[in-house]
Length: 370
Ligand code: GTP
Ligand code: MG
Image (cartoon, rainbow, N blue to C red; front, top):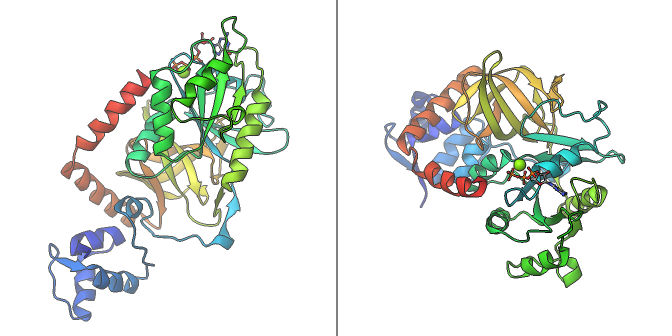
């Protein structure tokens, strides 16, 4: 049977240990902080503290500290989150750059104002697609290690003149492990040596069967350089999104993941995050991995300050006290005290099971980006 220590239970609820012990005593259970109690007793206490109980994997507990559950009627359609992956030099960055210029909301020509590792494109139809850039792979890998997924769809870029290469195969494995459907973008079709049919054939031996070969994987021929096939690729993404029926509850406090983060000389800690649920507001108190802070400013993918960011929106968060790890979950909490307690707990945990897991994740990441 599942058990939990009193200390851990208190930490997870961000409650004082003494209060948890008191509540236990009231229920006839005598326990010290280091003792374990069974799941049923824990459930009783959790409810007494006004939380709803959700027995889930540890990874989920870490993600949803507050344990907010979204009921189907609260869910609203959200844009798909797309990660572009593929072998080195097959044109991932070029394709992302080309797609970005299809943005209708951007206004300014060629509007790549800054690099936040993620951006959102608004199409002529009003539909939105969120793209994660290469550094997003780090978050992707870290999230996957936690059993959580940041991406809805993987666009697998394969150069038509080069075919399936080692990192193409690596990317396929990542997508499959994350259970994310793949759309194949056969790139560089403008090149003299381009052979899209060969790419389709080669993918067969990796269990990627495109539609024209009788499978259900969409493939689109594109040229990032000549800006060909971009609308077809976007259509394919939106079709896949429709099939996935992507939804999130916007009317709740925000949850999401850190895509990348850095320390900026002028602005301090800058974390690029992807909001997955709810709406993140300026002024919110956020816990991101083992760091926390009050959101001082939110900056969108065009470098503009915004007051809020909803589901599937990438945004830079200013105001955290430290630099959270890529892939770390973030969540909005009620107050500073709770934020501090959660961070203390996590920093302790980080010290406990140190690097081992991270080193393993790094290994695959380095291979992938090498
Ligand atoms: P890494 O980030 O290093 O893995 O590479 P990448 O996959 O992002 O490739 P990148 O976009 O940097 O493109 C690699 C090279 O291919 C560049 O010289 C591009 O100009 C070229 N390239 C990309 N797309 C096309 C295309 O559609 N046609 C042609 N002819 N060249 C392309
Ligand atoms: Mg690149």
